[in-house]
Image (cartoon, rainbow, N blue to C red; front, side, top):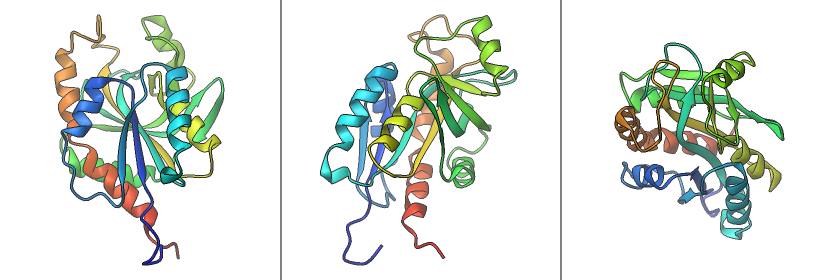
Length: 213
């Protein structure tokens, strides 16, 4: 990036108001460029519409896109408050590889010490996963599921070449299944973790701005 060029923006996409609130009340210092936190609404179609519309803004040309929020863990031993860094997102519409996974893991360990960080494929669904569906998705190799990340990243790359990533906080896991999203006992822990991740996102974004050798 030349001294005259504007820093590339970062678009952070989440689905729920509580996720957006956590991100907006987190530590805001250290961003490598303009940052927009977008609440897409719940589900893949809402994510696709919101992200596509947002990235049509010329001010976000070339923006890096990071999908975040809560997710359901698929693997035994996962706990609410664990972090998932996607190596790729996948759903029936396609698979999108993520950029800078190793750096995100390192920075998340620093930002949220003591929390377990899992890496692997993050799969998409159009509904809340229960019971046997969790085992079925785990058998595909996915380690976590949510409703928006795959649609968010696919929509992002369809609008133009750009770096993308997905980081989710586990709020629902095989041994800790939620009855409903509003009964967030484990969600209190997940909320606190989500408030703490922005420095890691900003380091990831800043690394994308460094000249490649």
